[in-house]
Length: 183
Image 1: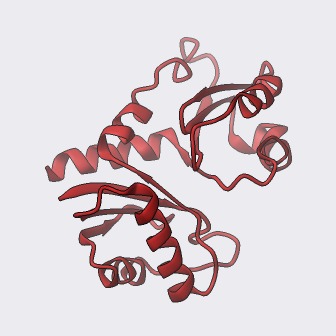
Image 2: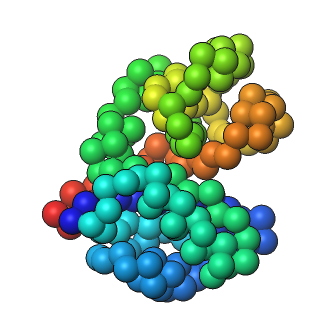
């Protein structure tokens, strides 16, 4: 069986409240096994016989809209892909502890095209740095997320309606550690 992590957009934000036992039950209903959740923000770890990520994503999105009553964009990654995301070191550096920084990972539904890469390159400032790699955009902010002028409006404009979900790099590292412990 293959293991995946479903990163779900819109879980426990924007008025959409979902208890994790309900979310696990929805995945159980689809025949997934070893279903667990990680923090209450839409991170679901599961196993399945399917290796068709596109069909699996469609199945999950259809089932969640039926079960929850609203669209839930879903981004599937394998444990190996999660390891790759968490090992990105280019943006995860400090300056000797003189200032704090945050790193977020924006998950895309497909590899970024050249146009999207250029839009993110145009957003780089002294405060915000972006690295686009495959299906992820790594965003380092000197300071907190809410300190960035790109928080909400600027990032939304760059994405131009493209469905995404975002996770803090520290959360992804903790999730990867949990998966490794369960192996």
